Length: 375
Image (cartoon, rainbow, N blue to C red; front, side, top):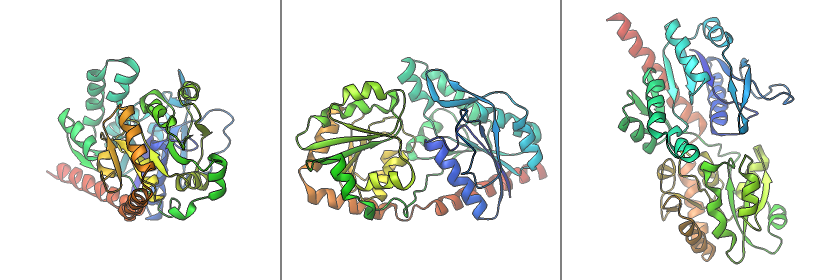
């Protein structure tokens, strides 16, 4: 199968879209498929692209105003040329918004079927950043995804949202987790002593530091006796969060094995964002044997079994987050039980298994398109 993946983000970017796209490309290559990735160009000075397992086409881009870590692709003939030149059987659109919309249009002009992966809660972001605009965001989502042969939703909640807002042809496709990299035996006692020199219980957050992530909800956790909050990630909210979370340790971005050591060295993982269509960091914490506290909204509803692998709390509720962390802090046996159950729950969720499900969706789309053309 000849596949062109059009993505809004790709490594060295550090986010869910970039990570999922990289894993998808790797799996397609491993299974013998012919793959090309099209992505926005990175910022000048980032060095050569070394992570792509297949040919990578970069489209000229500009930084998003107010959020320079996000690059927005400019109009370019390279996109349509990549799809046509590769003689694509199918176009995979990863979180289509700007470049992906152009990819959808190019695929339609060329008569190539397109699979769109819904990965960003644009409606939730509209509420966060503009205080309004949710209806307009859903019109945009319907327009973009309605043109696809199939839209893949990462969670049950995301699938329900798409269907409720009139998006047709939707199926569920979750995310895998690297259980070889993220595992309990990565726990690093030297790192723990560095982060919590007085033996504090370590509560960690990993992710982008942006308003929609609501990381400030951990402020009450910072006030718990014997608890040290550790924040991994970067973004525009970092200066404000350093003021809002007194005593917290900010590690900046961590990736690869360094990130895995941080995950495994936590006692509790706390996620605060209420707009997650999936929430990969929850899976990585579970794979690391760490109990999870997360909002009862979006992707975490599928991932966290309340009272077995962690605790789900009402979204936007700082007091509930604090209470859940305090309960776990006071009960080492409960933390151990949740951590072990979390690891067991994700052991079968490999990227290979998830990638094979994706190939199955491709096959179904191609069969449907062939049946329509034959009719």
